[in-house]
Image 1 (cartoon, rainbow, N blue to C red):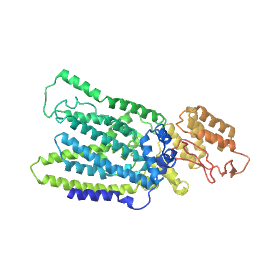
Image 2 (image 1 turned 30 degrees about the vertical axis):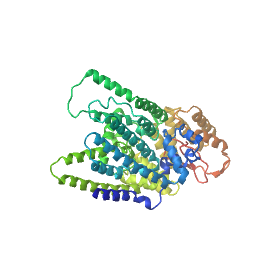
Image 3 (image 1 turned 180 degrees about the vertical axis):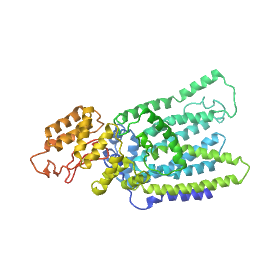
Image 4 (image 1 turned 135 degrees about the vertical axis):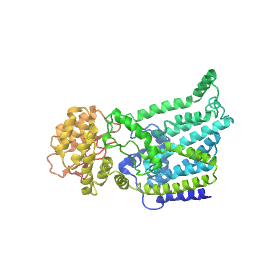
Amino acid sequence: MLVGTVASVAVAYYASPFLHGPWEFIVSWDDSINFLDNTMIQQPLSISSIVSMFTTVKINVYEPLSWLLKALVHSVWGMDPFAVRIVTLVLHWVNCLVLYATSARLLRQLGQPHPLGCFIGTLLYAVHPIHVEVVGWPSAQPYALAMLFTLLCFYTHLHALECTSPHHRRFFSILSMGMPRDTSRLYVCSVMSKSAAILVPVGIVATDIVLSTPPQPCSWNRRATTLALLRYAISKAGYGVSMLGLACMTAAANADGAMVDTDILHLSMTQRCVKAVVVLLWPVRKLLWPTPLRYHYQLPSTLHASWIDTDRYVYFPAIVVVPVVGQLFTYIDTMCYPWNRTLAVVSLCAVALCLAHVATLQLESWRTAEAVFRHGLKSDPTDWRILDQLQELLLETRPAEATLYLQQTLRYSPRHGLKAQLQIAKCHMLLGQSAEACAIYESLHDRYPTYAHVLNNMGICHWKQGRLRAARDLFVRAAANGTGLTRGDKAPQTNIILVDAWDPRTPRPTRWAGGTASIIVGFSAKYDWMVVVRSPKYVFWTKSS
């Protein structure tokens, strides 16, 4: 009774932020690409639109089932950020129900059934604030969909084990069973929802190992063991083939993102080793003490690296909490003191209510882009990525405040590497220090003479200096032979069209083919491209996609 009441209160409180106030897309952080500018999900559902989803790579990811879900939501509610979040919230609750059923079945097959422990563990997982990002950020919806298919995959696998071999604890009984028909298909669906599920077969094998371990030591027969392992490998061939194919597909989709010059950050081998250790320990720390939470975390400044982890990445590994809590209650029940179980139930219920309160506060920070970024700055005022996003968000409406954030961005931004230098040049240009910015581009051009971003931005410098022919030549080189171009980048081509329409004899404001514009260079947080965009107030530097 107590646990049911606490669960109802915690779940209702967790969802309470959706009962009031507006909700917006985080347009400066992937939501514009995934929703507002995604014509693929805005078209009426048809065979051709579905085929397009299964043949398209967008922002270096391939997730056709997630795009199909977005299209379904759009067809019912339109482009509504509130509806997207509600659908994700429902998916999250469904995931928790399947997680409970899966964990209870696993412990039952281990001979340690404890439905109450699994229920409390599921409650802790459901209301934990580290999962708020999946619910609160529209672009994180694929994680919830992929988790649904992943949990169904585990549940179906355990069900097949239970039905196939009633004596599942007998050594090698699992190794000798056949491959369940539907689980590999569910695995494929999970990866086609989000590539974060690519390692699900590892969890399936780990589950089989746990269930096949004998309760007592037994003698080994080399021949029988070899044959059993061979049969097991054959039975898991579907997973192996699926995993290999999906891994190749994911690698191909992320080919542009894997380039050495894709991001500002450059890690040495030593730094990568430290990062690996931090990544392993970080989820445990955030699960046990979930503060301060935000959408990415920085390594120590001595490593010159950030964005190593985000809250949503814990959504998958955290499912192990549920069977662990179930086993904890099994252990408590074996102790002599009857009040131990009551104390554990009351304590964990109190923890669940506290987590629900923190999650509710955390969810409020996902209402708008500005709320997200300001929340991040409270956690780390030196986070140059958030500072950069915030200054871009405020550039048109509150330029004075944006300038302050821009100065801080310049102060804390990394200095090493090609993209880092492009970031620094962008900050200088926005601060009106075009001479410093163009000097950086000149230096980068000497070292990277074929890099498209450098050629394009050098062209803008020549344009500002009135050297239109030189500017156009650089745009042409960037468009035709420039390296580092990713799918859909049309910035150099756009600038070629605009420079051809430019009339240097006309005083500012200048008459363009499409309207009036003034040469005031603006920038995007993507820090790669300068693109001249016709606007009555600004000529923006944006990332073309």
